[in-house]
Structure formats: structure tokens, C-alpha cells
Image (cartoon, rainbow, N blue to C red; front, side):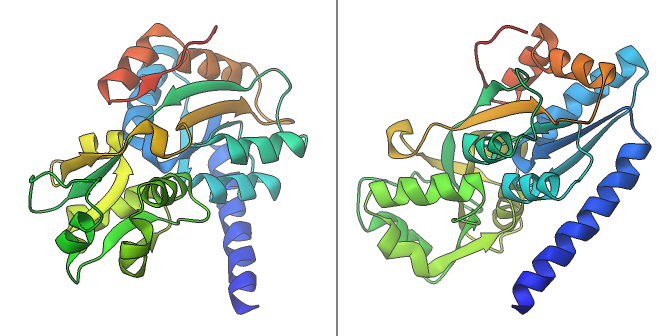
Length: 257
């Protein structure tokens, strides 16, 4: 009960902060944490070109979706999986026809102080490498990166051997930070997160067939935004943004702007 009260308070506080942020910007975007480095680059380019201000709030997709459900003034939402976007769509919170699959990603195992590969087909290799250390992951039952990671470990028959050592964090960038700082020797993050940090090494790639497809859907939020929002949405699907996303390691989905 106390946790539920705290969670509601956190959502309300975040919503009020979002309202102040939106009032000062031409476009307010809620985006999955894993998009930060690339999306910041795209936003800077857009602001320089148009003179408009883009405010971006990053967090786990589950947290952002709940904030939108509670009235947070997001103009545009970019989720790290389809499920949370489906929930908002079912609630009637999306602008009809604005939803599009923007990007894709891959899942990797990263280490702090070694670049020695880890076999994902050996049932004991990962647990042996961990020793008494922790495996950093985003929340495995709520945040997309954590959900994908858990699914991959389960499909590979590795989950039971490491579940007791999983250190869960609010979002995938927080999981990355645990490994980058050496707090956790290993972690599961997106390939793009690993590319954004010089303090981690990719030691294994999870086969795509071991987890659901990693897709980033984007949509406008009903009752919000306007011409500037539509303009930024189109920019995110344009050739310049595509090149930026690709340079950060994202898979650009085929779509019509």
C-alpha cells in the first residue's frame, strides 16, 4: 500500500513537472531512455533549423505511458515497445493515424572490465562469469529492455541460473550506468546504449529470435500539440534524422513520412 501511494505521488509529481516543461517548449516529447543520445542530436538539429524549442522527458516507457494516462502534457510519445503504445491507443489517447513504427534495436550483454566474449549457449558461462556480482537490467516486468532481456535469458535457458543476481533499475540507461561505473560487472542493454558508452564492452549479442522484436512506435497524443508537433514528427521520419539514428546504431524502419 505504501509503495502504491509512493508510485501515485511520483506520477503526479512528474506530471506537474511535465506541465511546467511543456509550457516553456514548442514541442514536448516523452521518449524511452534508450533514445536519449540520438534523439537529443535530432532535436538540436531541428531547433537550429527552425528556431523552435523541443523539450524531451526520458524515462522507462512504462513510467511515461502512465504519466500520459494521468494527464501529463506530452505532445509526442516514442515508446521502446508496442505494448505500452497499444495501451494508450486502447484508452483513446493517441491521434488517429499518427502512430508509426520508427526504429528498431538489438539486445547485447555488456561488461565493465573485460572484452572477453561470453557464450550464451553454454548454460553455465554467464553465471560463472558473474561469480558473486550482479547482472544489471531494467525492470524485468515493466520496462521494455528488461522484459526483452528476461525473455532472451528464459529462451536460452539461462534465467534460473542468474535471476538471484539481477540488479533491476528504473530504465535501461540506469542499468548501463551500473556497468559503466563498475557497480555491476555485467548488464543487458540495447546495442545503441552500449555504443553510447566508452566504459563498457559488448561481450555477447542476443539472437533476435530469443526475444520479441524490439520496435519503437511513435504517436501524437490526443488533445495536445499542433503544427510544431506534426513538423517534429515528420522530421523524425526524414532523411536527416534517419542518418542520425543510424549513426547511433538504431535500425530505421521503413515508413512513409
